[in-house]
Image (tube, rainbow, N blue to C red; front, side, top):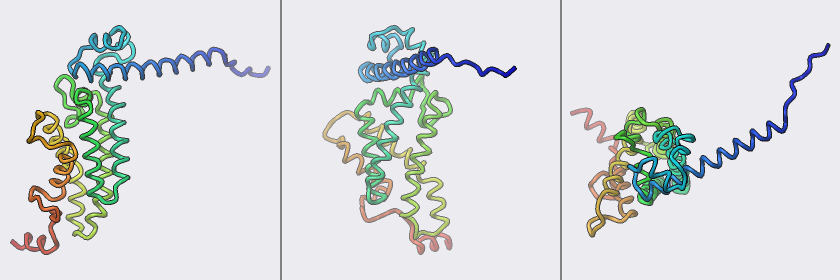
Length: 240
């Protein structure tokens, strides 16, 4: 007797697909509602407050995200993904490494400034800093991928920019500079975000230019100074 093939219930399979699609849409809608709530209430908002703002119960959020850390991870994937897309687009539209860095810094500041509460929520929860300590955060995988992609974007133009420098200097710079630059941008940007508005606070584009200049030329305020040692400078340092 021939073995009969398993019968697939197409109606049941269709219902399952529709249910999964419904859950996905509902989950996305909850994330967007929670994002609006955090934007208005701040990163310390409770799950009950978030659910109330979304017009539902906190049990619904627990059903979809487990807990507040799960919601943070889901929102982090969305927000950080959007941030990454904008940084990539900004870098690709630039003609020079310096212009690319300035565009990325400006895009970062713009996104953080637009909703500082959401920015804080996806990078800090319960005292854990997801950017400097990604392993201790529920968004660790998202942040690791984000950092890796940003570092890679920085490495390629810098490799071209430093192609005439000694090989040892190039290797060391590419190994350390992108990571250090990310930390510099983040620290300066967050200090700027936390500074009260006033005549001494630079505008966003001025701050983006300041950060770019500091990374490329140091604090000399000389736009022609790249801060890169010449071959003769390297020899002089080694002979001392």
